[in-house]
Length: 145
Image (cartoon, one colour):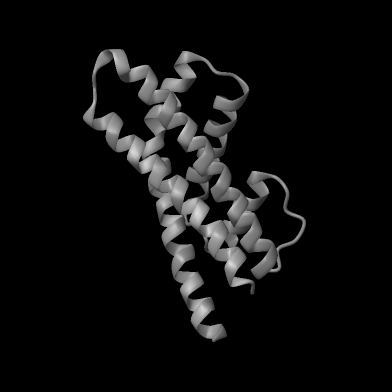
């Protein structure tokens, strides 16, 4: 296992999950009507980055350390991550995938508001994934030394 590559990729995931958390907290504290659109759009953008890095990191881990090969699409990765216990709520991750696709392909006000409302649950799922993979990393690291 290349610990340095793993740690670098994991730190990027953590960075964006933390960024999403920060954005959610700022939006919660500042409910000024003239800033709602700005906070919504910021949260959506950070959600998109966090989701992208999360599923791509899952793909990396599955291919390198779980012998899962030929997984290309986010849904295939999520199914494999569920099978190998990296995530425990497949439907929640599918919903995040749908939200990500909705915001990146067609940006409408109603869609944006619905995705924005879903982001706190998405954050919880990403945080759970990060915590689990962090625990596994520590196990792998200490078992390899």
